[in-house]
Length: 339
Ligand code: SF4
Image (tube, rainbow, N blue to C red; front, side):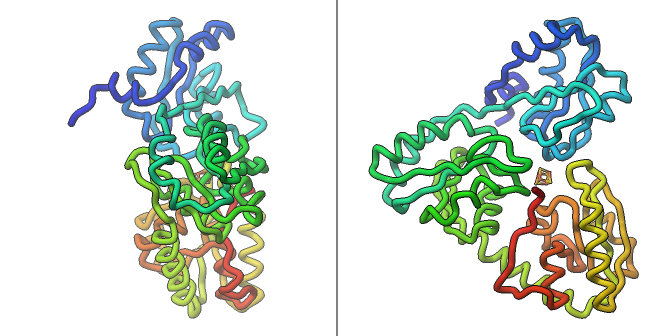
């Protein structure tokens, strides 16, 4: 089935009138739009509607955007824009080079029928986690679980996480906050990306209530094979002598002091490390560095965890390098997170 642009846009709860009001109130003459990949399809419609409603010039920033870690404030400023509208992610940075407005993209769905159907599979003490798109559902889910006789908890947000119960692909502070007080986590949303991270970060059982597929999944079926692959990558890197140390160029993925620490760890153990700064990290961009035996990635941790099968040579997190170098045991395996 082919959806029209207006059908795609209506799948999301998007307050474009609110955006137009901000533009008029602030007197912006040119604004930039930064859209997540799932909303790019609707970019032309959003642009045309905002330009029509306000008379403002609108520039869609077309490069891929996977998180607020990749805030395009500099690009918007260089293009002569007065402000940046960043859709679909919550604020990570306190300061930016021009006014930035974070626009929530809600996905309107009723989680309760699916939850009711699967209630008997859940334990008594439940920790709730979700993404920004579904954060508005948490309160009614807490009420429902309490009425059903269960304990439902929501952890506090810390670091780069903006809302209670929210998780990012690289930060699970709200889950860790309550991990020792729950029997399992219930993730509300879609896909495996975020609930997998909760499972790896907390080591607790995680169930994903997938509102798109209409099913409840036990995430151990996904996290156990990933852990086996991580173990294999660590084993393969044992004999590596020279490592590429990847530094992320996106501002929210740039961990320069960690990269320097990694170099020190390598040299102390008689191995060598070479800094490589990258914006997009893919198997193809690493291919030409043939003299290197393995890589340590200090940029987005999920590139290492989720994409491992795509890389010919081992790509490790800094924590995994510690295991390779004998500084940490496999039993102390921990998810690399950005706080
Ligand atoms: S660093 Fe990775 S996981 Fe974290 S917000 Fe950016 S893209 Fe998402």
